[in-house]
Length: 144
Image (cartoon, rainbow, N blue to C red):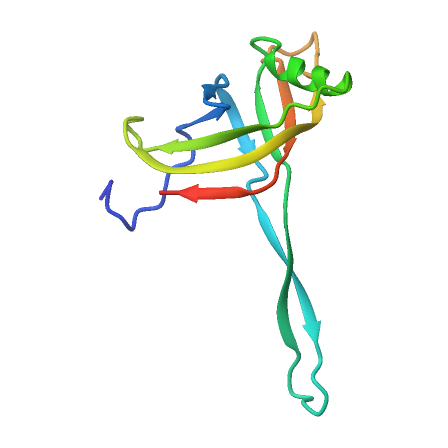
């Protein structure tokens, strides 16, 4: 039954905003990932197991893919190339199937462009020109 709290969230109705401005229609968002480095500690005299202790937490770059519609993502990266570092925070919002109710929000904090990839172009295909922007950020916050 749709809408029941135990139903999984859908992954095809979402939007991305950066500094409070909806940043166009993205076809894919990836890299929403945190990883805990596990440090192993062997305690003297205890040979039956090894302690696993949490170490530093790292976050992957967030990858945004969209059809090229304007130069805003390129301009942000180009500013960085000129030494103008612009940290921006943003939100990935996931909606229910009606696109009216927010199922969850994931905020990313103090991001900077880490990599921009222009579209692959081929005269023998009729695909949309897609640009990719990777964002290095300083943390994630999940809100329901």
